[in-house]
Amino acid sequence: MTPRDIDAAVAERVMGWKRDVDDGTDYGWSGPGAPAMTKQPVLFSSDISAAWQVVEALKAKGDIVSMIYRCGDSEPWNKLRWYVEFRHAQAWAVDDSLPRAICLAALEAVKGTKEQETKA
Image 1 (cartoon, rainbow, N blue to C red):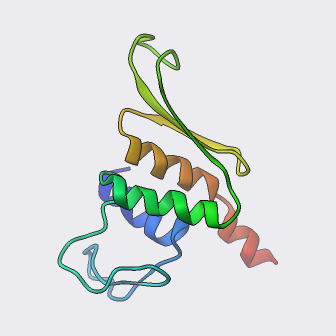
Image 2 (spheres, rainbow, N blue to C red; image 1 turned 180 degrees about the horizontal axis):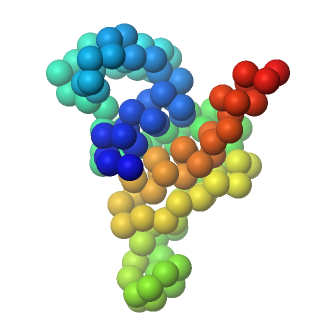
């Protein structure tokens, strides 16, 4: 997934936002906490303040988050990387970037949520 794909997926699947206009841009979102129309996309996967909104959204749903900067998860074994886990959802991700790790773990945490809501 490209950073833009990750940002859009997080906006829709994690934050619950809807596109006001589907014109191929990352502008014009609506929903709880969505920014007003802006010329700048929301960069969840590269901006820590935007990524922290994702953490807060999942915490509000009752999840617990762990973030650790460590080495030893993959080769090279001495490379430091971010490990992010949403415990209740049993979802985690590892990445060089904390915002990207948050987004990838959050997307894993909500995986299947829409299908479950549709069947209910």
